[in-house]
Image 1 (cartoon, rainbow, N blue to C red):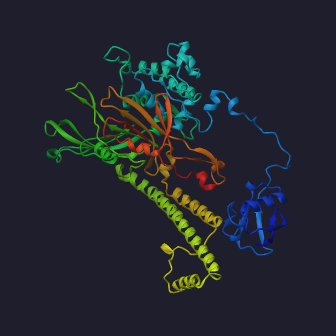
Image 2: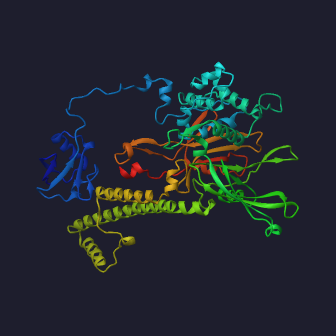
Image 3: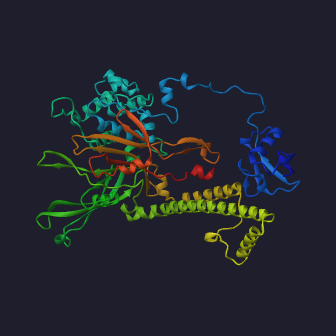
Length: 583
């Protein structure tokens, strides 16, 4: 096919270019690079419907001789001379172990089992998955001990060692720093000593007399979070000169219940319901013979019977306490209440029942009426955008398929002109079928006008940007001002602690943490970067760390002595920020 002479305007200059219809956008950009000095990846060539993509076949542009195209972009440097890199390039073999561990995508460090400490290792790995906690811990300085101990002062300045063993939060800071500098299994000895000093229950000896006893991961989680709530503080966003320090846990991991204590039926005319407010650090999923799904267990946990004295009746009576979420935290902990005290056995037994849980949790139904009204518009808008995106992708696939069928038909018709009469007759019959309306019509009123990849991508980007603006506008102002809250009612699963075995005093704990997406270049994202996740998870089995597919998480619902979920860590789904909307 003959080339077409076209004109490309760039920075006030006109360049005459021979456009080859059989080549693609990448080849055309290479031609322009030789004329303008602008690298292909920095070029933006405007065509009908958007920008020219590298894989676009130029014949689809239907260019006419003398047609003018507009190009934008500047060379990466003033001259074509090679410049010395700002940072010296360092190869993997030249890096230290700490530098390799900090590389994106590096396998994270495991934790050595120091004798029945798998309960602690799994807990620490899931807590480590909260990036805001990592950032706040890095800034933490321990309060000086009252006695003025020199060892304690070491921890105050982040020097770790023996000084931090007296402060659980400082020990956690030092442990996570050390873990970030290696890919080997690390011994959490200093933190374990701090934990046993602060909470002697974890120093209990095994019944055999050899070593320490196995412990409950949920108890370890609760005690560590409780200690962090007291010690780990962050500055508030107050504009006053003296900013108050608030608890990190209260901002990001703590929610609020509105509670109602309803008197028994025989006292309902004599007593008023008692309304209150409580802080919660986790939701309990109660399990019995009727519970098959996480949602049912949470509903059961939000209603409980309490025996207390009724002044109106003059005796003890059964009251019903119901709780509704009035503030949902950014990070939501859910606890499967699988362990109970079995009196005849004299130990904690495990409920083996299978209870499924979702990768995305909707908590709107567990909230107060006021919070529901704030969350529902955002939640429904998120689902609408997802559906629209899915429909657009399906429509695009169908349109491409129809376009290919049409091109194949035209090719067959052209070949039929020189073929025997039988083929010509078949082509004639197809044309008659189309005229009579028997030909396949586009579904769902889709346009039968074929769009190039550039046109489709431009429309898609414009649609997504408009949808994000609508979504951002739907966020309630009060929730937007609460940095550590959930603003949509939707959570995505990020961490799981599992238990294998029949008793809390035995068995084995491991944990799963969803991989953090790698940073990729995206000119349309805030800062020119965005995270791209592959959906895979890290499995932490003490010092052994391996990558698993998301399907593995679906097998952790229980149903036997195999690994079953004990603690789930959910994170609020990402919503567009103000910077993203304004970019």
